[in-house]
Amino acid sequence: MAVINVTSEINPLEKVLIHRPGRELLNLTPDTLEKLLFDDIPFLKRAQEEHDAFAEILRDEGIEVVYLEDLMAETLTQNKDLRETFLKQFITEGGIHSPRFIKIIYEFLNSIEDNKDLVLKTMEGININELQIGNANSLVDMVYRENSKMILDPMPNLFFTRDPFASIGNGIALNKMYSQTRSRETIYGHYIFKYHKEFKNKVDMLYARDLPFHIEGGDILNINESTLAVGISQRTEPNAIELLAKNIFFNSNSKIERIIAFDIPKKRAFMHLDTVLTQIDIDKFTVHPIILENLKLFELTKSNKKNELKVIEIENELENVLSSSLEIDVELIPCGGGDEIVAAREQWSDGSNTLCIKPGTIIVYERNDVTNDLLSEKGLNLLVMPSAELSRGRGGPRCMSMPLVRENNF
Ligand SMILES: NC(=[NH2+])NCCC[C@H](N)C(=O)O
Image (cartoon, rainbow, N blue to C red; front, top):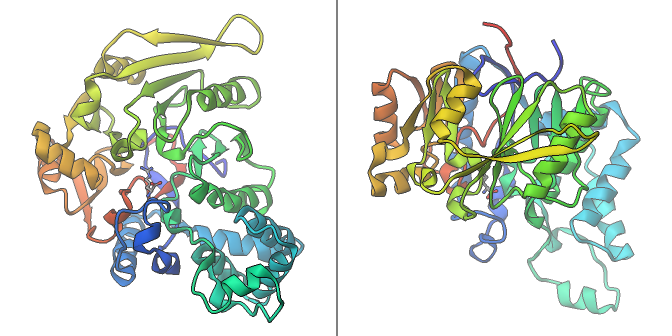
């Protein structure tokens, strides 16, 4: 089987990419929460325990779990010459432009011998007080001296591995992120998919991190071999969907023939399509009822003209569109059972962001008990994980996982 193989949201999951939240969470402060896209500071020890419980559930189901930090460390070990390029790219993209500081930070990071420790340190961020900046008489030195300040920001959103890259069929979209604060996350994907022995020359790259328009993996849902759904959201621009469509249709071996674009409200609570809609069984989806009110759907296919797209607005209800794509009568199960307050509360903590690991079996956050009871009543098999701390980052089990391989036939 291909190294990347994901043609649905529900086929049995075989291999998944995750990241264990690390010391990057310790560098969140009240003043930086908004910029770093968090709503509170999680208690790291508990967040790690919760995340370990998540990984355990996956392993108990026979799924191979790989960690972003391990893949990146292996990439550096396999390709010794990449260390310098990676570090320099990482430092300059982190906003450091003074040659003296580039050198100081480069030497600081490069002195970390073990590749995994090095990768974890890049994720954690660097406080100015960890560096030996000497006594040079420059303004920068005088201002920075003795202060505690992050000279390279942490990347606390890395445990949402769904967003920086997305599997589509046998390919990967390496995304251009919406926010500056998440843009360096895709550097790891660039090196892993290009240079790691397991992936090198084996993956169709369907989007690139240096394209001008932003798109994130939380908006990308594989409906089946031939249909892809993509959200137009706070995080994903229509221009990016057109570029992705052109790459898929005209520059790749992808079997996707049709992309359905979902125009959802542009706000933080619904930042990605997967915060309001996820497939959980061959004929069932969870949905946040509020999006059904003004949802606009568009279809992108190849036009008759060479290298051009045909775009039309779909004049039909979501339920019918999904039913005809999947060739089965689809049921939409409302988050919170339809009560407005419960729906808003449980959606905020990712009640509709479940990870389906085989048809009808889903991983859910424990705290969303109204939605969970409803899903159980509907016959779903729930694997429940603790969620007090992880949910403070506004992502659920789907956001915390990037499937690499799902079975084709089962
Ligand atoms: N696929 C998702 N829904 N991811 C959620 C990401 C949450 C993260 N704090 C952000 O704002 O970017």
